[in-house]
Structures are given as C-alpha cells and as structure tokens.
Amino acid sequence: MPIFDFQCDSCGHEFEKLVLKSDAPAPACVSCASEEVTKKVSAPGFRLSGSGWYETDFKTGKKKNLAGGSGALSGTDS
Image: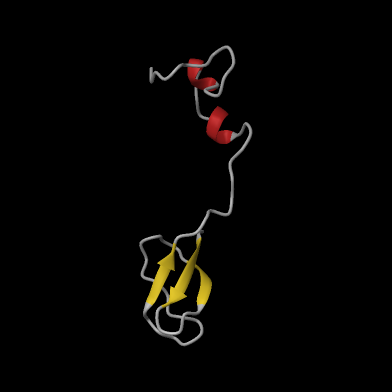
C-alpha cells in the first residue's frame, strides 16, 4: 500500500499518510484537522534492480531473458 506525502494549506504542516487508492480523497490534516490538504510529489521508496520476477518470470521461449544474453529480442514484440 502506498504512503503519500501531504501538506496542509491552512497551517503548512507536512505529514505522511497510508492511502489505499491513489485516487482517494486527501485525508484531513493531522495537526489542525483541516480538509484543505494537498498531495505532494515524492520519490518512490523502492528500486527494482538486478534480475528478478519482472525480468524472468511468466515468460516463455525467446522472451525469457529480455535483459541480454543468447535469447534476447531486440525491440520486437513477437
């Protein structure tokens, strides 16, 4: 579940809140309970690196290793 950064427009307090959907309404300020809250843009808290499920799982045949090696395809989707 994603954690978003928010800033209160009334008091300026910045806080983080766990929100179940990215399109859900912004929560009330935890400091002054104001409903005037803006979602801030923030960096994600994770990084996908190395070989893993997103590169090797659920693929068959020549699409098995898209990152390189002997079975790699070059920009084609066949």
